[in-house]
Image 1 (cartoon, rainbow, N blue to C red):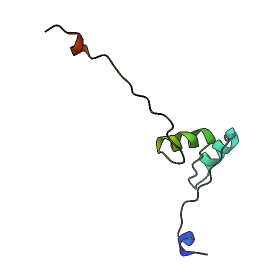
Image 2: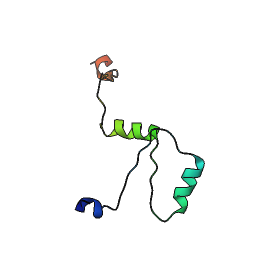
Image 3: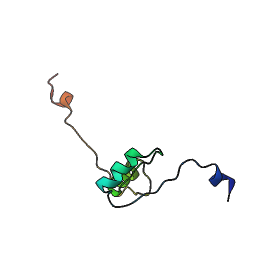
Image 4: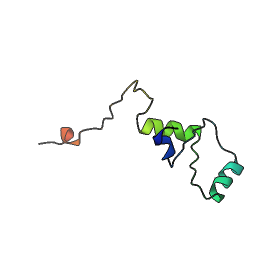
Length: 72
């Protein structure tokens, strides 16, 4: 076994569906820290951190320039 795996204290499993209430309850009760990341949360994190996503279109948000309409 590689040294990096022997010293690893975190193992991550990611699932693309959602977790049952029983699974969520179980991870709250056990001593080891487990973070459940379901498919929806995974997609949100990927978008937020630009991982595995591509920007297809960017929109400019505009507002009226009030100074343009003020009389001098």
